[in-house]
Length: 322
Image (cartoon, rainbow, N blue to C red; front, side):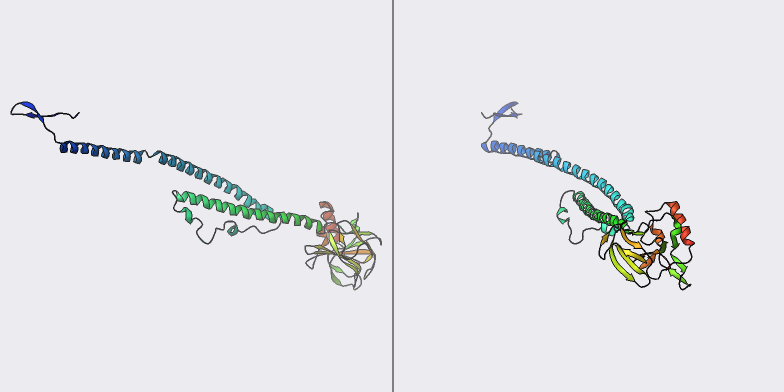
């Protein structure tokens, strides 16, 4: 039922009924609808701008969780980088020093990724700096781990080679002696027994009975079995790693050319062949063709006191026997 509208008439001093046209009523209704719509739009705008839709609120929560996750990842990457840095330091300053290998250059460990921008597809993301930074840390950490893994593979090979090297280096005396008086000549300048002139003696001479067993001083392959001018019957062992040993003036052989021998095996017997003034062993060690003083290679046989006494005795010997 339509409401009746009244208007006050000052002349009659009374309220008179006013006839409201349809057009007026229609305009009033439209104004009411329009104001309601404007108010609704304003309320919706306020709601969405300050409170957001349920979907937006859900996405915002997910975004916050992702940010927290990225921050945790960054912290974990930093911790992993510290641990890996410690491994790299040990690798360069301990393991590679022990095995006489060059440390891995820092340019290799810290090398980046050249070429195209690997992170271009991440630049348009929200919080792109954090996402790209995390991706870079992951890539760098992965590369550093790969480099360190390859380094440990090399160290493992060096360990195996070191064991072989330690077994191959001449490290015991070539003859079993209890008395250092059996050292007739040491390494260095000595008087030649035949020519009576000063001549450099390239090895050490040990006296003994003919037939006394002589030993391989390290793992080796027999390189030569036969007679050499001046040396008489001779055995030469190739130990690898540039090392060879020579046994001269022998009475007989216990090995053949090409045979593999282990440290401590009997390879020959002391004799008096070649240019020799009496039964003895002339023993030499060479590294890359250069002679070395054998007295420095008896560390598996002698105590510190015994070594000092042997050095003093060998230094005081005068004339060689070959």
